[in-house]
Length: 424
Image 1: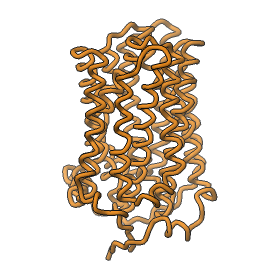
Image 2: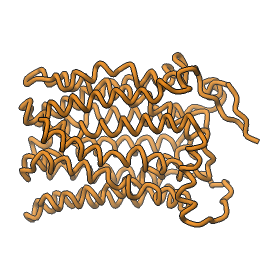
Image 3: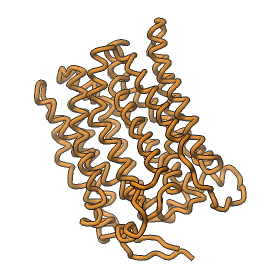
């Protein structure tokens, strides 16, 4: 029978080998670091390609963000069933190869004169579907490669890779866009996905000895994850907080490049520099995540991470042309620190308490809700930018982002120091 104990995950981790000795984790970490770098480069290149090469409007550019995240709303629950039924590593390899092909099609289309906004929409949307499948499998595979005691450390290291990529990727993307053009930048992104696929091939996955539950009707299987979450009050609060935050973060994200280019008159290099500055907060916090969690408390750190950085978000709509554009980067750095610390603690808790047999469906249910609102947030950002102006829209978005902390501040987490560890 499963019992909850109060033993700290940090003490439990001290009795198991370091992740630096785990070949499988190091391969996964290395491949994802390269893929994250390629993705961050492309994140700058996509809106610049639409704005500068295809002369898209503010709303048309926000549609790119909408199409990137719409697959989470449409395909997350089915993806959870797929991830629980098939070999997760092979599914991730197939997704990487598919995304590489899609990214490489953009410079080819530009070369033959067939690159249009509709083609870019199609590539972004299809890549989004593959990313959903990859992400659900990825979050479900990690606990099979990493001991439960090291999940916090593993998630933190992967978070460091994301922020290190955010630190240098946008600047590289901005520089490359200025040197070779936005379309050719996607050659690097395609190569990054190929490297990720290769590292996954090299992983020696341990045999899965998890007993397979009997098949149930598809409708029941698709709602298993949601049912589990409903029975976990802490997960409900975390899910509500993440969902609210994602909505407003993506609303601002869908117009931020347009804001910097058209309101602040930033060059592609300056846009990349802003995103690089923003990654510093997440990178520093990622390195210190385990220590901060142990010092503050693994439960307390969830609401502290959401509430404390909020005042810095207000610097984003206060940014001005010239060096004042860096204020936007400082605001993003505060959010990056929040996101890393919050996500590492929240995801590690979810992975620890969820039975392995339904982890894919629980992860998928989380993604369906908290990522499913992202395309709606992107459309909201484009609409607000059109009606209120870009700066006015940003004020609405940053205040909405900060308000997300209320879901975890006004919850049982505020009266807890540590989350309960789970043992058999």
